[in-house]
Image (cartoon, rainbow, N blue to C red):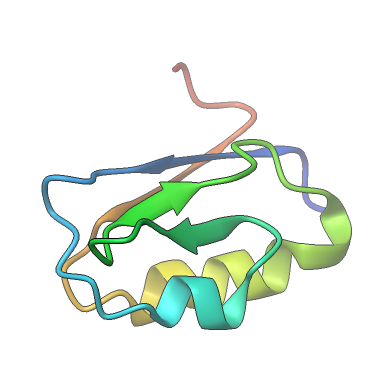
Length: 73
């Protein structure tokens, strides 16, 4: 089953700086000098969607939210 486009949101307020997101999907996530999440691509390509989903699942503070294309922004 092919998934539709995905929109990624991050909460810098919730981020605890664990860095799993940047390790798992560096095309989409980075970290500031303070270690807080930076979103590089809110609409990642299909090739990295599995890594983005894993990053969201592994985030210890639930700072990453994924929205399917069918969801309202």
